[in-house]
Length: 287
Length: 322
Image: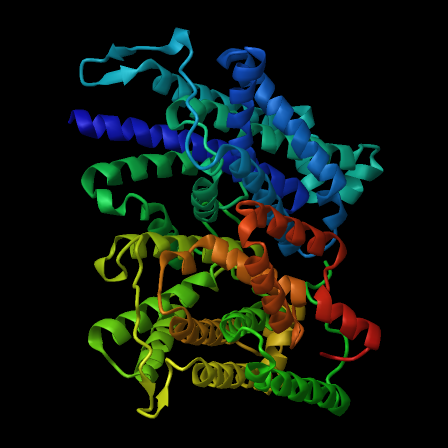
C-alpha cells in the first residue's frame, strides 16, 4: 500500500503541473486564439530563472517563487508585443507554428550552454524532511507543491470568473471589438493575459525544479501531455482545465502502480477514448 | 479569418500547362543528377523527404488540416519495411508494400480519431498520437528500442535491379518519388481535390451542398499517411536503418518546416523546401544544437514575413500556379 500512496502523490504532483500549464494554455487561447507551443520552453525557463537567481544573485527559493514568474512573464509579454500580435486575424495555425519555432529557439539556446543533463536545485530548508501520516510517509516539499498549486489554480479561477478584471477579460474573449468600444484597452489586456499564462508556466517550472532538477528539455515532453490534457478537458472552462489536469495526473500515478509499462501512454490512450466518445472534450463546447 | 494558403489563382488550362512544364523540368533535372557528380545519397535522402513533405502538403495545403504527427507514418513504414526485409527476408518490392500498407492501416486508425476535431485541436491530437506511438515503439521488442533496426539488406528489386548499386538505387528512388508526386498532382486536380479545397475554404458551405466532409477529410488523411509511409519505405533502402529518430516529434516539426519554407499549398514548394532543409542539415551538422536554433529562427521568420514560402512568392510574382 505504501507504494500505491507514493505513486498517488507523484500523480498529484504531476497533476499540479498539468493543471498549471493547461490553465495557462486555456487562458492564452481564450484571449489570443493561439495555442502556445512555447509553453513547455517557458516552463523550463521558469526553472532556469530560479537556478540563476540562486547561483548568480544568491536569492533562494522563496524570492524565486515570486521573481521567476514575473521575469519570464515579462519575457513572454515582449514576445507577444514583438511577434505574436502580428498574427491577429490570421489562421490559428500560424500561432502554433510561430510558437513552435520559438520553443525550438529557446530550448536550443539552453541546450547549447547546459547540455541535456540536469542541474541540481535543492529543496528550501523550511520544507525539508517529511511527516509520518500513519499510512504513508509524506515528504513536506511534495505536499507543499500540491497544496500551493491548488491555491494558485483556484486563485486564477477566482480572478477570471469572479472579479471585475476577469469580467473584462471574459468579455474581450467573446467580443473584443465591442469591449474596445467601451474604452477598454484590449491590446494591453491581451499582452497581460499572455504574461499571466506564461507566468503560470514559469511558476510550475520553479515548483518542479527541486523535484525534477533543471534541464533544458524538461518542457519538451510535458507540453505534449498537456496538449492531450487540453484535448480531453476542452479549453472552454477554467475549472475544467484544473480538474482535468489533477485527475489525469492521478490516473497516471495509479497506472504507474498497477501497470507501469503504460504509464507513459495512458494519458494519450484516454485522449483517444474521449475523442471517440465525446469529441468536444469533457467540458468543451463545439469548436 | 484568412485562409492558411493563398490559392486564389483559378485552375485553368494555362495553370495546368505551367505546372506540367515545371514538372517536366524538375524530372529532367533530377534524371541527370548521377552524371553531374552531385552526391547521390544526398539527393536520394532529399527525394524521400520531398515526397514526405508533398504528402503532408496534400493534407494542409488542400485540406486545411495541419498534422503535427506525420513522422509516425515515416517511422512506422520504416520499421515494418526494415523488419520485413531483414528478419523475414522478403524481396524489396514486398518490403515497400508491407511498410506502405502498415502506414495506410495506421492512417485509418488514427484518422478516425483525429478528424473528429478541427484546426488547432487536429494539430494537437496528431501530435499526441505520434507521441503515443513513439512510446510504443520505444518498448516493443521488434524495433530494438534505442538501437533501431540496423544493417537492413537492400536486395534485388523484382529480382533484377541490384539496389546496392547507388546509381540503380537512385533511379528506383526517383521513380518512386515521381510516382508519388504524380499521384498527389492527379489528386489535387481531380474532383476529389476540388471538394477538399472547398472544405478548406468554407466547411459549413460544403456541408450544406451535401458533401460528407468528414469522409473527404478522412480519405485525404489516409492518402497522405499512405504516401508518407511510401516515402518512409523508400528511405529504408537509402539509409539502411530504421530508428526512433524517424518517429520523434522533431521529425514531424521538420516536415512542417520543409513545407512552410517551400510554400504551403503549392505543388512544387514542398520539394524545394525539402532540398533546402536537408542541405541545411548536412552543412550545419557541425554546429550541434545551433541547428535547432536555426530551424526555430527559420520557422519564426517564415511565419512573420514569408508566409507564402519560396515557391509561393515566386508564383505570386509571376501570377502563375506552381
